[in-house]
Structures are given as C-alpha cells and as structure tokens.
Length: 480
Ligand SMILES: Cc1cc2nc3c(=O)[nH]c(=O)nc-3n(C[C@H](O)[C@H](O)[C@H](O)COP(=O)(O)OP(=O)(O)OC[C@H]3O[C@@H](n4cnc5c(N)ncnc54)[C@H](O)[C@@H]3O)c2cc1C
Image (tube, rainbow, N blue to C red):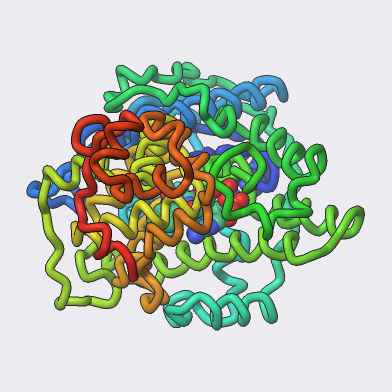
C-alpha cells in the first residue's frame, strides 16, 4: 500500500527550508492543507477572560495571510500538486480529510504559544489512533533541540543566552524544496480562500501612500524582499547604523511579516547573510541582523519556558506591586495618536495607517502607555496584535512585557520619549509625516509644541487643544 501523508500548514507558509513539508514528502502521496481557523478572527476574550475583550487579528494581517496562502497554493499547483484550503477549525477539518484519503501520517509545525499548543493537542486528539502524528519545530533560527541549555532552564536575560547559543549551537542548513506533486488519487475539493468579510475581521486593510513597503504576503514576495534588501540595494552593509531609522524602505530589513507567517525561513536569512559575508563584506551590520534574529528566537524559547505566565499583568516576574490603570478614555487617546506628545502620536498613527512601525517607534509608544500613562501593558499589546502585519505572539508580548518591566531583562524598560524624539527625529520629519498639523514648525516646536507660548501658538496657527491636542501628561514628568 502506498503511504499517504497530510501536511497541516500553520505559520510555515513556504516550500523552501520547510522541514515539515520535506518530512511529509518521504511518503508516496501528500495532501497539503491550510485552515483559516474562525477562532482567530474578530472579537476575542483575552486569555479567555470575558472582562477583557479586544479585536484579534486585524484586516491587514488577515490579508497578508490570505495572500501567503494563495502564493503557496500557486506554487503547489505550478509543481503539479495542490493546497487544500478550509475555513474551519483544524480539529474538525483535518480528521475528515485524513479519513477521505486514508492517510497514514499527519505532519505539522509545533509552536511555543499556549493557544497554538492547544490547537495542536486538539488536532492530535481528534485524529484516529492509527494515524502517526509528527510535529516539527521550524519557526526559529536555532532548533529547540540544539540549544546548549534545555529551553525550560535557559536564562531569563538575553545576553548570557545569546552568548551561549553563539558559542555552542550551530544553525542547521536549510532544506531544499521537495517534490510536492504526488497527490492522493481521489483528491477532495480544493476549497477557496475565504474573503475578509467571511473571516469576520474588524477594520480595513491598510492602504496608505506612506507605507514603507508594499507588504505582499507569500514566499515569492519574501524572496524578492530578501534579494532586494541584501543584494540589490546592498542595505545589509549599513544595517547596524540605519536600523534605528523611522522613515523609509531600507533602514531595516522589513522581513518580519514574512518571517512570522513562515513565508521566509530564518535559516535562509542566515545562509544569505553568510553568502553575503563571503562575497561582499562581513562587518558589525551583518552580525547585527543575526543578533536581532536571536532576539526573536529568545522570545520564542522564553514562551516555550513560561507559557501563559507571559499574559498575566505581573508577567513572568509575577509582580504584584504594579497597579495598572484601566482608563478607557486615556487608552483611546493613545490608540488614536492623540496624546499631545508628537513622537508617540506619530507612531500610533503610522501603526493604524500601515500596520507597521519601526522598532524605535514601537518601543517609545509602548513605553509611554505603560510608564507615562500607567495603563495595563496587555491592553497596549492587544492593540499592537490587532494592527501589526508582523504580529508574532512571542515577539509582541515578550517585548511589551520587557518594556513594562514584568518580563525579561526588566531593568531597562522605560524610555524618555522626549529625548528619544530629540535623538532619533531631530528635524521632526517623522513627526510631521504623521502629524501634518505640526508641519512648518521648527524641529524643537514640532517635537514639543507646548514650548510655544500662547502668542507663538496663535502666530503659527497651532493652538494646543484646538489644532493639536494638549499633552495628556505634564511634559516635565516625561523627562527622566
Ligand atoms: C512593543 C514591541 C512589540 C513588538 N511586536 C513585534 C511583533 O509582533 N512581531 C515582530 O516580528 N516583532 C515585534 N517587535 C520587534 C521589532 O520591533 C520588529 O521585529 C521589527 O521592528 C521588524 O522590522 P524589521 O523586520 O525591519 O526588523 P529588523 O531590524 O530588520 O530585524 C530583523 C529581524 O529580527 C527580528 N527582531 C528585530 N528586533 C526584534 C525584537 N526586539 N524582538 C524580536 N525580534 C526582533 C525580527 O524578526 C526582524 O524581522 C516588537 C517590538 C516592540 C518594542
């Protein structure tokens, strides 16, 4: 009897360096499947708590996912195979498909987040006992089994962990694209990719001519971006110097949406960097891109270690001394980019309009919410979750917890947003790009419009409280 394997795609929407797909392809026939799980979209209860509801994955992220699935399907079809698509829970859709093709094995990616883990267990439970299930760890640069210290014993601070991994863990070589054309004889109907309305996502797909990049989902676009950033524009050469930028296409790689949907393998980025180092230059910048990928790994392994503890108000530190405010009006001002602090407002408006923000902007907007407004960090994280095209649970909640000083490396969480603006946006180009009402002001006034007295405000046509919000927080308090 020929062996048949089903591959359930998750956040690994690629054919290159996909160990799950490669393992499945050792069977005689393979059936690849993707499920749009209705539990992921629309209004959700945070950690199952009815008292804390928020809008889950937003339209931008869902559109990116749709495009990524469409691209993967096209690749399978071009190779003579197919990708089946279902709009339904995987633990309901998969057993039926496995039975239909009389599958012997099911292969899927395993992930670190409790909710994602639960989905895996549900699928496993729902499959017949005679089906062999194989789970594959494929989301990170370093394989979980290659960590020098087991994941549940790793240090909670980044630097010792990174040093250990750099010294003692080798990044595995990427795997080539397998032959994916051997579908089972009687293939169930392919199914169509659900539109955004039927997914029930909240909000609109970002469409703004100030987008830093056209973030099209899929492995094809991911490969193009990798090529463009590293080889065509040679931007990698300067990454360490430019990475704190705020405006433009190439100050940072913008790989994150593709990495997190799995359209791009971190190991492939690693290999490309190695090739670039051999062919062009090996410097601080080439090292630093890999350094940042290890931050991404670090948070993934921290979630493997701590699981749901990350989502508690006191985080993995179990802090009980923090009394988070839950003021909806103040929170809405922050969400809307109407705090009266221009650097923060620019960041929040960019997020809403594009689904993307630089790391610098993410840090400052988060720090303002948590340290200057004292609002529950998880509200902010849930807002980012809704808007970010590159939303990754571990990177998002891990970074938020870090900034709120309830997570890893919790010493350095708070930012002085005014000196940050002075340092990273001295001419206020970023501020004026997103807060056009401050256009025409000199840098100092655009960054801190309260420095203008009443007369100057009137003369320049920017009256605080009328043309632009008055600051929500006494500016003196914003300084360290
Ligand atoms: C509050 C907050 C929330 C965040 N939420 C997310 C999120 O949901 N998804 C996400 O991918 N990143 C998140 N980040 C990390 C970081 O801001 C983004 O990864 C980065 O800005 C993406 O742009 P890039 O691909 O051009 O990054 P680059 O600077 O080019 O970095 C290359 C890659 O390294 C990884 N990386 C870089 N910095 C970090 C970091 N601090 N933590 C984890 N990985 C990192 C990313 O995979 C990134 O694509 C968050 C940061 C903060 C402060």
